[in-house]
Length: 71
Image (cartoon, rainbow, N blue to C red; front, side, top):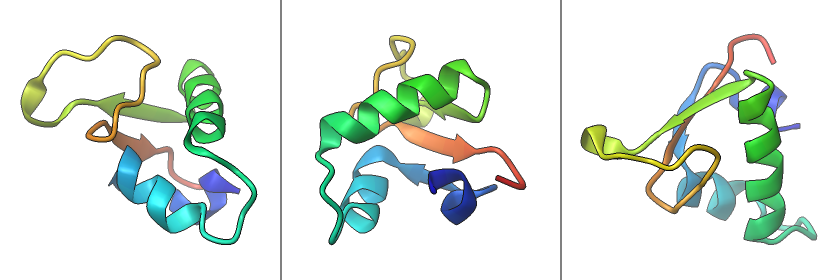
């Protein structure tokens, strides 16, 4: 669902969560678990803004997520 809706786009974690979770029974930890798995599978890349260091597979509110094309 995330790949289809966000293919080729870059969004912050907080933006993704606030827009996508409306009306759905998921909390932020559900999103973080799915994003972690998607990152391991190469379906997205994630980085901190302005080149700040990021621990792998962590999704703080300011992490920028870029989804692969053609989800």
